[in-house]
Amino acid sequence: MSDQSEALKAVVRRNTLDVQSGGNFELFDELFAEDFLDHTPQPGGRPDKEGARRLYHALREAFPDFHAEIHWQAVDGDIVTTFKTYHGTHKGVVLGIAPTGRQIKFETVDAMRIRNGQIVEHWGVANLYYLLQQLDALPSSAPKVPEH
Image (cartoon, rainbow, N blue to C red):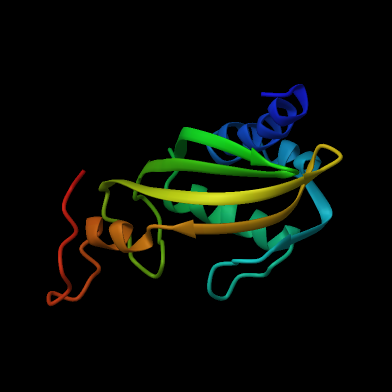
């Protein structure tokens, strides 16, 4: 693995561990480029830096102990792909669901393009179906996903 690849992964790790998990929003401002573009914003979310900031704040309000476990990262050119599991305790509204106090976890895969040490683009997929299942927010006719 080249030093350049390790440097790119480190930018994404700092975002995942220090900003998302640690709530360091001063670092958020350093890590995200002003022209950041999210290709997969959440429904009703903005595809820009402010939209990402709002999403991160909303996650920390819904899950005050929100934190990520990084399983692996891969680099292709200037894009870092990360597979991780988010964990937290549901103490605020999420996806319109009132707090349940439950421990949750859900997996995500995301890809971030890095330019000059900053995140400039994002693509991501989150297993929100599994999250909804843990919060008993699925219709009773919905199939159950086996625990892993």
